[in-house]
Length: 111
Image 1 (cartoon, rainbow, N blue to C red):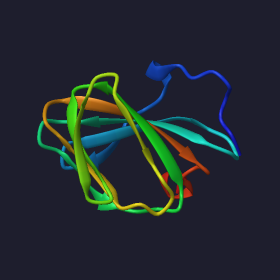
Image 2: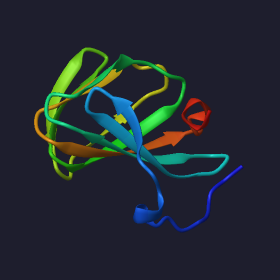
Image 3: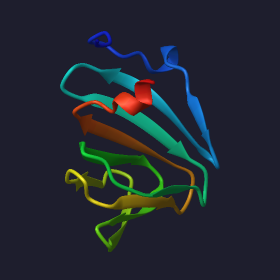
């Protein structure tokens, strides 16, 4: 299953994840998935791991990003890469947005 080749942001609904975090699945195919995640100040993307390779870009805001015990403060335009099964998480230091790309797609996000 896949989505259209063009994504119109305003046509995609937000999913409220609670605790000041929400996401939009912007598109996916059999190989990858693109997701926008919005955080309120202080919201946490808890430490977790998954088999997917993930890359992300800070669209807006500032985050403390931790990958395998190493924390870096990232701001608008910065990005990071998460290897498969690496322990990682984020803390929003101000209102912010991350653009995440996963390969393969996160089937758990589609359930």
